Length: 424
Image 1: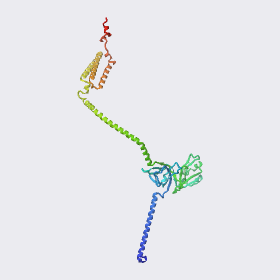
Image 2 (image 1 turned 180 degrees about the vertical axis):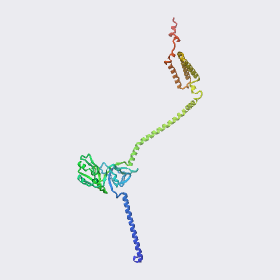
Image 3 (image 1 turned 30 degrees about the vertical axis):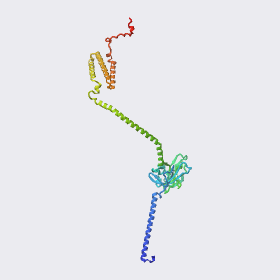
Image 4 (image 1 turned 60 degrees about the horizontal axis):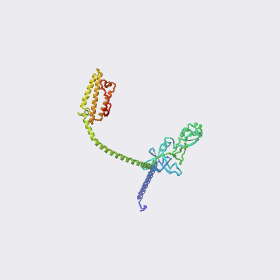
């Protein structure tokens, strides 16, 4: 049906519907474009596309575990990413891999000329490694955002508000051995610099802050150079070996130590077998010593009964003899005040009785083989004690023999043969 065949009311309704659909499509497209723009903006903001990035580079021995786009970490935070990795030329023998990375704002402010280093460390057990930078501990910022300007001493003295202008270089004396002024020092001592012979100075205005880098620190020259897209700051690298290399080294060490471990296990097996033999022998010894232990227990149990070890060592007759001897010795000591000579003689007789007693005890010991060897040694010591008393200076006179009571010595008759005896 053609549009001309419709009634005016239908044509009016149709035109209204078309306008509504057009507005709906326009609104949908606007929302779609807005959502896409918001997504791109949010992604760019999240990934730091709008942030200023400072370029750095370093060198590594190998590219194992690293790839372009990997994050750069600092203090546990993602502060940048690796942008370039290339092998060094074949004629370069000092370095192997060139690694370029960038640090985004504001983290490049933590990188200073002293203390900031690049570290390639292990990230996991699968060989992955990560590039990490350390914050600076002193020195100068690697990049500055103030405009640089080289002026003479006269021009510097004519600058307004010298406290806002600072040095962009280290100033040395004519000999190059004494540092006159550090970089980033305010221009408040230009007279001393002029006296030292300085003619031109590189300075920067701290009151003017730019959004992009204006200068990069030159370590050999000790100054800030003008920043260009080709200039980058180098960080010294501290590289650790990958996990695979560490595992390979560990496996090689284990292979070297394995023969020693096997030898040690063999020695342990030998020791265990010897211990088993020793325990079996100890068991046999214990079984053999069981009767001895039972007899010893029986003997010790009978020590406090009549006829025990005490009476066995000192019989009844020996006790009576000892009592008699001690009684005689007591009587002798009682009469010692009246007659010392008689006392000495009685003491001699007592000692003789004691000697007889010891001889009797010795006879008993010879007859009784069950008496311990210690008792025999005690008797010998007692006999030595008695003999020592005979030689003591106080009792020596009691043991002397009297010449008047001595028996005459019979003359010695020479021996003769029977034939000689028959002769007159």
